[in-house]
Structures are given as C-alpha cells and as structure tokens.
Image (cartoon, rainbow, N blue to C red; front, side, top):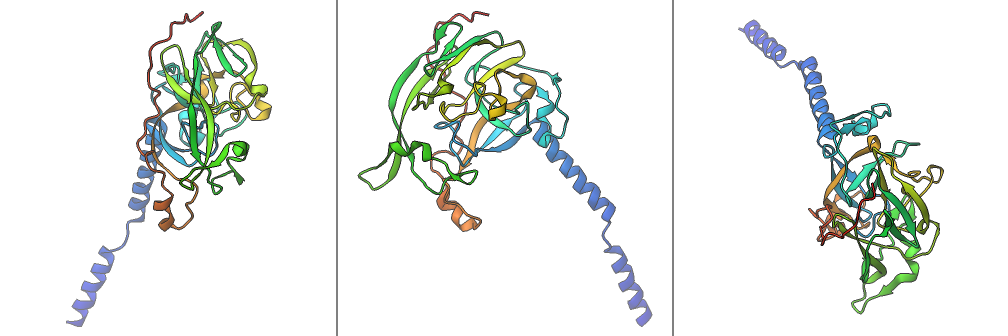
Length: 295
C-alpha cells in the first residue's frame, strides 16, 4: 500500500513539471505580438520638453499611430531597423499634423508640427511663417495660464525658467505663467495656438523650398524648439526632413502628470492634470484660408 502511494505521488509530481520550452515559446510569441503592434499600429509617447507648449505639456502621455503615412525604418520598435530611405504604402501628412520624427544624426524621437509640405516654399519673418510668399495668418489670443510648478523638471532642470518674467499669483493664491500667444491657421484651415515671446534667431529663417518626399516641421513653442529651423549640430532637424524619418502621427492624450508624482503610486492620483485625458491632438479646422500652393 505504501509503495502504491509513493508511486502515485511520483506520478503527480512528474505531471506537474513545468514545460519550460512551451513557456519560453509563449513568452516569445507574446513579445513578438507586442513588438508588431508597437511597430505597425500604435505606440505610447511621453512629452519630456516644452517645445510643443501650450498644446503638449511636459508630463503628457499620448498615443502615436504608426500607419497614417505608411511604414519605414523608424516605424520599427525601438528603432531596431537600420536607418534607410525605404517606405511602404507611404503617404503625406496634412498641414497641422503633429508627428514624431527621428533626426538624421541620432536615434531619439522628437515631436513637432507639420507646417510645410513637399513643394512648398517656406520662410520665417519676424516669427511669422511665410508660406509660398504669403504670411500665415496669426491672431492674438488672451494670455494662457500655465501652472507654475517648480517640481516640473526637463532633463534635470526646472522646465519653465525661461518664462520667469510672466510668473504671477492669482487672487486665488495659484501661481501661474501668463503667456502671450497667437492662433495660427494654415492653408487647409488647421488652427492651433503658438507661443512666441522673444525676438531671437529662430524667428528669422530664409526661404527654402521643401523637396519632394520631405516636410518642414516646427514646434508650437517657437522660441524653445529645436526643429527644422535649427541646424543638426545644435540638436535641430537641419531643414526639411525626409518622410522616411517620420514615424507616425500623434492622436490623443491618455493622461498627464503635473510634476508632483514620485515613485510612490499613492502620489500619482494627486499629480494627474484634470481635463487632459483623451484630448484629441488633431488640430481643429477653421475657415479655409485662400492661398495658392505655389508648387
């Protein structure tokens, strides 16, 4: 009887042995599925800088879709593919689209707005875009109020030091930056807010023609964006960028932290910015401005 019990226990133990090969195969398939979704459908993105203020704030988490313009080397997860000029089912962005792009001299994703398309002539004069010989309309908007949170850090430095002159305390006791801003409207009617509070070199850019298969990108925070106006050696994009380096289109914000979060999950709820979750990043279309393309 004892031998039968021991044999039964041995059989049960053998049956419970883990099939490590099957487990590894399942894990590999799961990872491949995640990489495929990340490469071909969509990926999360985090905003680490002020270059797209006020439309994107430091701490915003958003979804970037990979398929609107087709696929290229930069679509592949974590940029595992070598840099190349190939494109599959390639499409062209629209004016005002917010896209991610990989600069030609490094492999980090930047996020900028499309302001000129292939064949366009673009210049920047006193901070205003001149597209195909015509100034892009800008209208003054009421000052924006951005929370003056000293805990909001950008690469180890307080994010908003450049706005110190605009800091004020409201009657409620809330500290904010009241920033001058303008509404810009591109030829297709795409309309969005930009900040331009300084007169500096990026406000003056000689006219260039955007080559075929390229777009011209700028940040919405015009005085603090290393974009197509800035040389590569200054961490900019070095002029028009090839569409083979554009990896997708920003779609919507999932949630946003205001800088007060820590490693402790209990702090996350209090650090959530209200009103930003599920906010669409597609620019609203205003009345279409009459402007010839000049292509």
